[in-house]
Image 1: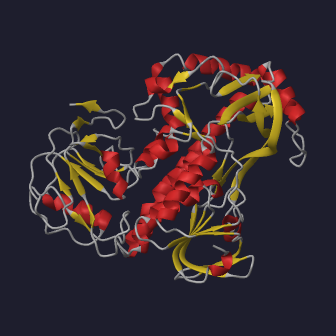
Image 2: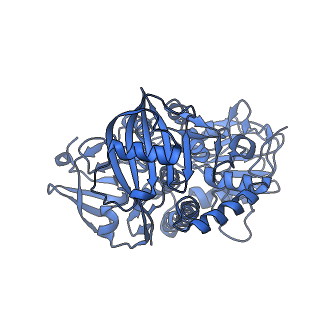
Image 3: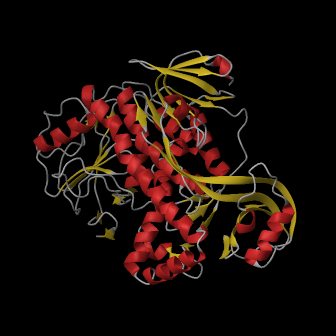
Length: 536
């Protein structure tokens, strides 16, 4: 669709058709929000900078029924090595269905998300460059380079590190630029490495080699001899071959190069993720060193956090100040996550590419000592994989589990993350109950064993509320009213299932007016610490 066809008002305009923008648009569309994607590029890019899909991102994709499709596009790496010769086994340290890093070109992930967007009827307007932005009390008007205008109730900038939306908002992008320039190239190798993900490091720099298939590989080189060459200087096959020789000791029979580029790495974060009716997500909100493969994963996490909240606000489920607080929580939850990613990747960057050789040696010695301890290995694995990501509790009186990742658990023949594919909240309680014949109740089972006694799981797989003891009907009513609006004061004791107020068309595309439903699930796993699950 061309930009000139954008005349009607939409609920949300998403600027940028990368993984973050596509994921966010899908989250909104599955809830009946009228969403449109505006993409500056006229054609889908085949340039791939992101490769790593981490465990928590795969869990989030599983919660939308997309994990298997993404898994089919890549290969799995079961360990990470913060320094050479000191690998961490992810299977040994992570409690997740996905104890590995999935190596898949960003284009593969984008394709899976784009197909879902097409099925949901999300229009992607290509060649739509945003050059103007004005907002008022009721919405936002975007002006495109061809003079066309787009009116939306909300706008989300997912348009990358050089975000036009962020610039037009006047939001500071705080941070620094790394001095190292990275060489990228797609090359054909006649003698490829035996390792599926080849990585080597020495005093000359770092090289990574990742397979595309059909004999083509992505070469990534941090070459100290060429780290300050201008970004406009072409990368040659001879330079890649030379870097291979000096850093890896072999050139892998590099015979052909079809694409190359120099990449400038930065560490920056937007001072604010929300200004009125305009929000920022993905690289528009944060950029950092590519070491650790965090960028796309953090962006998808942004989209999952923001999507259901923005849908609630657009649909007017809560109303008043509660809606503003919910939308504000996107920044209060995700800004600290972005800051932590910047801190972690900066530390890894110094460990691998620091300019002081003495400092690098000392840091690596300390790292080797730290990695001897199981607790340290687990903490590093959980942080790199995103499993450790959590959000602050709303108040000191909240259960300690609030804001933490909810692991996947068996629920009477299905899994929690399969139930989450509806995009709804999921209420887990224990004890017998009734309600199978109540109108609007989608599924009722009896819970046999679970700690705590009740958990309300957010649509993005994090804990909204938890109680150590079985809650009364009045307590449940207060929780449901807080999160879902309307009054729930009519609940009776022992009821195990509740209809959720309509949020619009569901993920199956049904028309407005059909209720979104709480699933009250029978839990056959015992959940204690939310990092572990034991069979009961």
